[in-house]
Length: 78
Picture 1: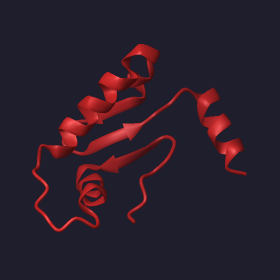
Picture 2: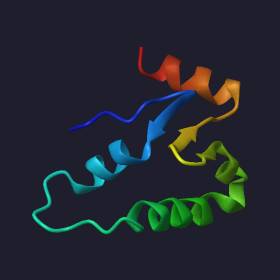
Picture 3: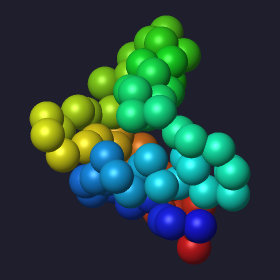
């Protein structure tokens, strides 16, 4: 599986589409990723975490949680 970068890193649009399409034997529409990101932001809205997903115009997206959350995530994987 193509790896999605953790904190804070850029994830090119084409890389994220590749992750979505992996293992599927059907066409993935270009707007699929945009719709998935929109839905994810809607789910996260109540917590304020929707701001953690930053759009990089013409490139892709960046996951950028607050530093304290990033540190907690790092510690939990050690």
